[in-house]
Length: 158
Image (cartoon, rainbow, N blue to C red; front, side, top):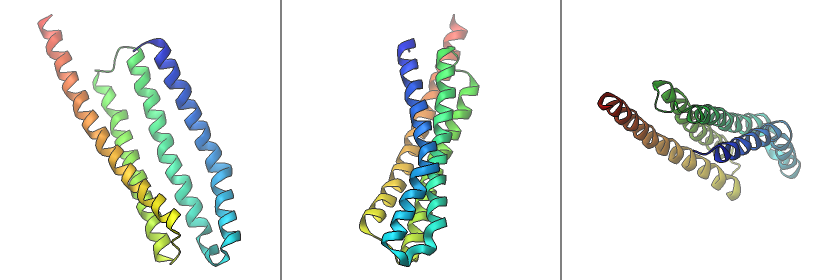
């Protein structure tokens, strides 16, 4: 992978991480407060909403940090080392955490009897995206394992 591409991906990861921090500190609490202002009957969901939102972003930030680690391994031409499986496993767990947190948010919202269609659809989308990305990363993990084996076999031949 070229240095320009690695640099570009790193810039995007920094932007994603920074946007995540801004969302956790400013946007999520602000959205929750404006929702409570519009629908005062859901004031009891203030803290569950903030917690679910912040935890969702936190899982994504964990995945971003692991992607940075994988990029470092690619840059050092060490992506086929056994150490590369650790960050991939953490990314899989992070996306699983996104799906689980989205499901908890869905359960809290529907259990409280507050379920605007937009919020419910968003939470269902988060669950589906989390599961889909975790499954995609499982496939990528298997491909990485096979590539590591092929690299080891090729090293034996040479």
